Image (cartoon, rainbow, N blue to C red; front, side):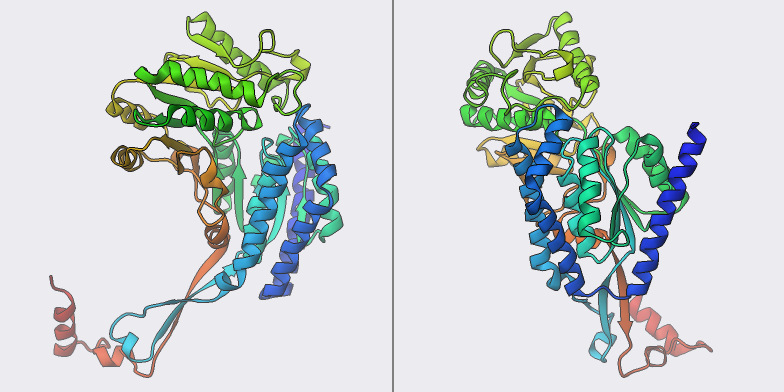
Length: 482
């Protein structure tokens, strides 16, 4: 079958699902609190009842991903987000009282914002945290009263097929539907006339999704990643900082959109930092290649990409420090596992400093003055996350106020994303819009302004009806002044 026919078949199938969901949404009318909670409960049950099968599927896709990693990053976090939405949903659904303009606020007028579901929301998910990236936005989507169509990444086929099977078991297709396939299905999905699309993935693909969505005026939320910096302050506890940074970097084999990408370390404390990094990895991962706790690259293509960064840096004279026992830097390509590597003071033209790493590499940038660090960060595209380690409150305030990123964790890595009560999203090349908790509920709702007139006719009271005369002139003079 040629490509145009593939695209046509995918588009027809997807449109049929969209029509089914939209028809059901219109027929249902206002979505009751009980209905929303029931859908959230079914999501929780899906995850809890099938956690072993989910762990097995994810492990097959990665070739090596510990069940404990999957339970922590994919299942536990998803259940937590679903429960958070469920706990707060009744409060979020209430009309929000606002203030009418003067003097109508004293004359019986009322103003409220009603948060209404948009309809059918499309969720396009990445491969790196393949289950959580479905359920984290889905918690907000269902909490807001919508229905959902979900397109998982083709790079995790076992997980995608399992999710398709499980959602069909726990939900009607008119409520939540999983669609699988490659780029042609993704292109057809992003071209649908949905009521909102949330895409998580590469900036290059996000640009295409936004372009396709624009044809139908579909609003988009994009979570795209980027090169997230770390700033280690001169006065920090260097051992603690190194431990937390290297632990965060090793998580999921470095394959997280919020993973530290390059780390500024004071020149005077560089060797102490590197020494502690070695110790931490030795404590947490005594071996790499035969260790089920250390997550492999998702596939051979990504393995070769990350390996090329390391090889190029080494060829150009960069100091390369593999954090592993001797002989365990690289597995065979088919096993696609790479030990965590530190690249010390790589030059800016190297690929490791140009591309988002999304793998087991941490660039280390020694520095002398904080001004140069801030300038370096600000000269590049705005990252999804920024991390600061130190005890100097003034320096911390400078780093936060003089840089821009999607989010920040202080003396921690990635933990701002664990807070369901804070928005998660990027800025510029790292994304557009946000979701999670209350902010996600609002992202996937239409904020509808409702004004109710009081017991006085405002137009007559103010004298704003024609024919105009001195009364309206006097009113305007009273309002248009310094």
